[in-house]
Length: 319
Image 1: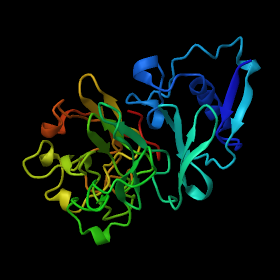
Image 2: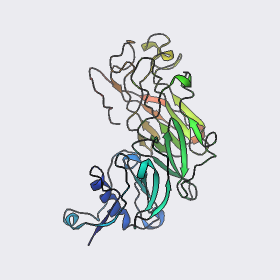
Image 3: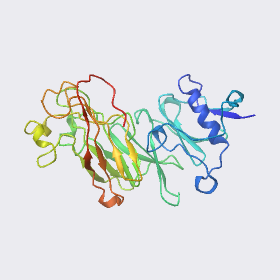
């Protein structure tokens, strides 16, 4: 009889996580050695496809699934990830937890995480798998947790954090929020991030950024509102980059890891979709930025963009 593990009894996520746990609970722990399949980040992987290729659950046996274990404190709004036989997700009172995928046994729990990225987190490990990290933002600070212990990685950034309000050409004290609800995307040793700038006048710009996962240093920054000398600057009012905000990616980023290209769905300039400045995209644009395969020289240069006009919507285009 097939058995499915259930992370939370809540209605909105229960069927989704039962499926994941059923697949991973019966898989070996090491992907490289035994063919274990992972769900390593938000939306399943770089392609944001939300698709898991498996043959253990079929139309003929799905009705025979039974509950193998339960974890009664799960939070439904966040996308759990599964790597090396461990489920990482949100627990009671917004905590961050690690539980064994086969048994549901709690490995560690970190309390006080209510303000972390709402929809999930990213996972990264080095080549030998000894350095494993969970990556997310909390209260507008990018930070990392040791996936094995649940403890902060203090070597990252400054005392373990990177202030995402800095480096946007505005006084950080005037930025009410910048952290997106989606966790960005990992590419090699980089974490690629969009932002949630807000939709009011004088909101901060939605620059696309890549940070080094090991150090927290900014590797590249793409100005979605062009600066002087950058492509497209002449299509905006003069000095628009100093006061126009938005033009941000708060939705999902897709990465073509083979070609080293990241695709960012871009929102409108503030205020919302009215484009009062008269320049730039009137609703959404989908540019791609290339990060070269050498992390030290990743560039973030634009390759192409598509602008879609005449649409009024609060939802981002999928990338």
